Length: 80
Image (cartoon, rainbow, N blue to C red):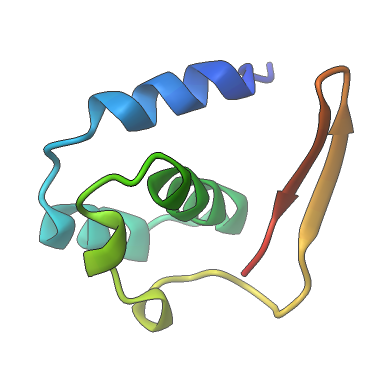
């Protein structure tokens, strides 16, 4: 079952005080490139403190191609 993007945004907002080193380790073990990209994108969009501290080169972000999904709310584009 798909979760609404708004729910993902709320979860990211609640992770405001998460330590960047802990999040980096979690994301390094994540098997879903889309999840990693979404986390990084939401972190940037919401200006979360840990977003600037994560080194994207150390994370599994997949190929250089963007992933695009169309929904009733519009387009979601996850860039590497």
